[in-house]
Structures are given as structure tokens and as C-alpha cells.
Amino acid sequence: YVMDFGLPEVEVVFTVFTESAYYINGKHCAS
Image 1 (spheres, one colour):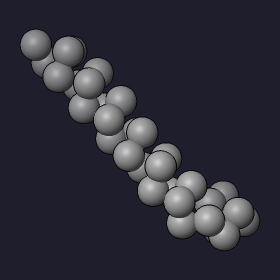
Image 2 (cartoon, helix red, strand yellow; image 1 turned 60 degrees about the vertical axis):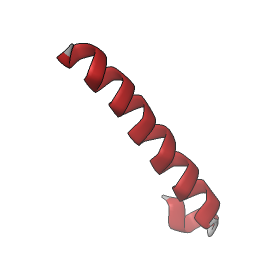
Image 3 (cartoon, one colour; image 1 turned 45 degrees about the vertical axis):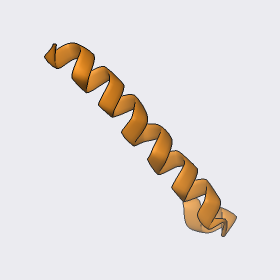
């Protein structure tokens, strides 16, 4: 999916956004 764009930035941003959301949701749920 990301390969179609050929933009590493897209994958990086998507990864950071996913990890950030997972971190926030995970911590809130854990707490």
C-alpha cells in the first residue's frame, strides 16, 4: 500500500501516528 506511493515519509508518519495512538490508548486503557 505504501509502496504504491513510493514515499518513505508516508510510512514514517503512519508508523509514528499509529505508535502514538497505541501508546496513548494503551496507557489510558492500562491505567
